[in-house]
Image 1: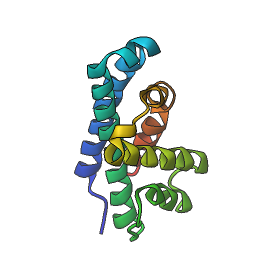
Image 2: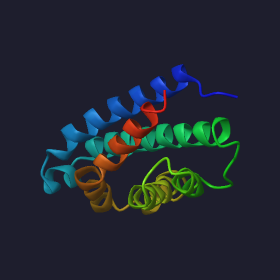
Image 3: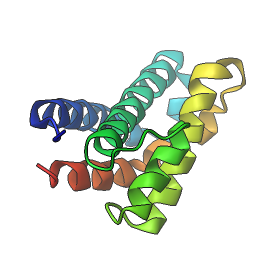
Image 4: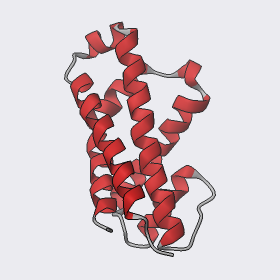
Length: 138
């Protein structure tokens, strides 16, 4: 089976939309970010959407191009790395991002908002690079 260009484009738009919002939030000072519950909530939600969209792309490409279905979220990025579709360093950082997604979803009561701020101020380029790599497949 072949890749679905419409699905890839739609997930790329979701990533782009979330990254724009997260970049706006990332321009706030750490103190302002940490003191505003609404801002923290939006950041977590948009980060979750961006990571989920990246994972959806990863699983789609793994299934349709590589005929593999990884057993875990982080492992999906390793699958694309092993196939030469993304570089090792990006794969490692995205695997960490997938684990961070698990924290946001499953251990939400332990979220360290300082860590959320660090992710949105230092790691958004990883999602952008992945989005570009996946868009380049169509």
